[in-house]
Length: 412
Image 1 (cartoon, one colour):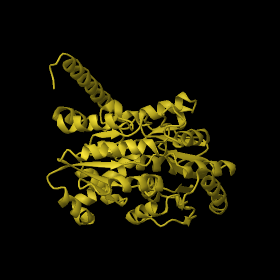
Image 2 (image 1 turned 120 degrees about the vertical axis):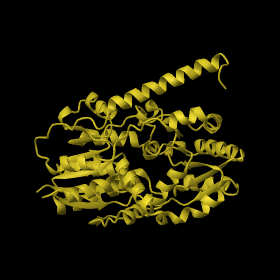
Image 3 (image 1 turned 30 degrees about the vertical axis):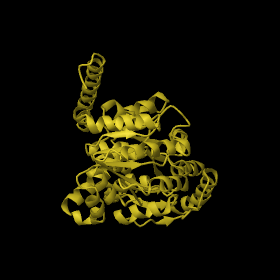
């Protein structure tokens, strides 16, 4: 009977691991324990409540204004006794957080195999995203099982020397969580009744959904983003909804500059059902979040990425996302283009999402349930990747033709 310990600490990890935990608990002869570090306390608790998850261990490690080095140390020392008590055959981590990296290191010190969900994402720049890029590389060095969401991620791992028989291309579990949640909301819209005042306030306007929290944007980058939002808010035909991250480096400046504009609604971070509903009603999304780059395209929402690099280049290649950085002029220009050019908007909205089919969690659970010292053969590619590639190629041709037409004045 495999004994599996799942460790997470933030809202994104909880969302993406929720379907995996559900599927692991369905596996016969598999014992599952859940440990949360509470790296982000309140935002994590939202997801735990929504998913109906009760952790077996809650380290409750969050501190106000916590530094990454102190947090990492607390996670390492906090997880040691949990590993000693559970004696897991495998520790499961997700993504690129301090919790995921520290849990992998703690497991390594105990010689416990690590399974990394959402493995292989790389931007190629250790300072963008910071510190997530290095966290992923550290986990990739330690992990025995690598669950890559896409072919690009799987290829990146193989290029780094990870043996092919321990790399599994499964799709991204966030699509599982998104589709599960949207199906529930489609059956019962009362679950998200809290958004009714916002819908009424911006009735007849197109919604721009904005999120911003990346450390590399603190200071000048966030100022530029806010300048862009204030300019866009003056259009008169849009409503901007901005769930504010609790980090004081974001919350303070955003509230000081944007709170009084009638076209901008600053709201608290939403629980997952309400956030899925926000994605559903949005016309387009401006974000520096990695997960939202995956979620929004699955609902047909174009994404302008408020970053200079992304480890989720599949969305850019497929035409569902566009990098705009934190420069005010570029953010305004690209947003106006999508608002004013129906053809450009449709090209992004109709591009196929490359991130999964909603069955990643069941594939991962099945592999973990039969794990042994000799890893099984890799799971083959999920979905019709030839179709994904064809759509991406078509989008590139579309962009090239538009560029030529604009150069000769043949298209507005």
